[in-house]
Image 1 (tube, rainbow, N blue to C red):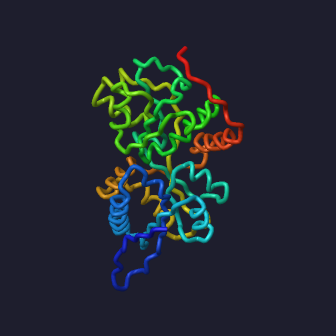
Image 2: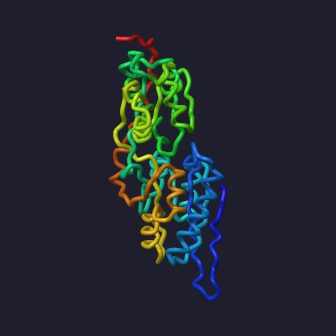
Image 3: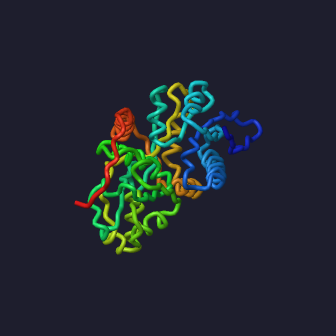
Length: 298
């Protein structure tokens, strides 16, 4: 477990600072530079706390697995936790969360995932991609896309990711994920609709050449929540503070690192479709493995 603190300064005679320990799943740093993210969060935490008048000293901890997250919550070593929604579903089998928030892109907490192919290849359905390469955008907003795609494969009797695709390549650059498919290389690209729309605005030819043969429902990629048994006189103000993260330049810069625009309070019901996906995937994985068949064009 890695720990880093904002090291807030206390004025002589001031109210003692309450330590606020916030956990981060290590996987939320996928596709971004962890050192840059940690440095940015330290500056942001110090700035936002100083400007809010709340007497807290944020301490940020990186946790490497869901098991360690559950232990940290049960042992009250953290007050809140940021993590991908698949890990949230996993730890909710063991704990009950308190207040939940989620980051937004284009005004919504959800993402649509697209499986893109080059329309000149004549690929119309998922089964035609067997034994072809898959390129995945490595991004916090794309973090659960593979979970959704694996559920699609299993539900259609096509096996799991590793046996279906010839290779799976992760790339932190959106352009390097989508452009090989655009230029006619074999396989498909797995990206978010929001990121693809931005690329198409810059180069409309992308939208004319790349087709989404499978599209996910709106899914929530990640969440933050406070521990249910965490009680603080500052809690309501902290929730309000989180909702205004993007009001400061340092807060907006930190959100940008995680490809988010703002943070909104939400309820477990807002996550229902996302959590149902992981429940469905767990059930599908219990089925006998599918027998591979050779893909043919219709």
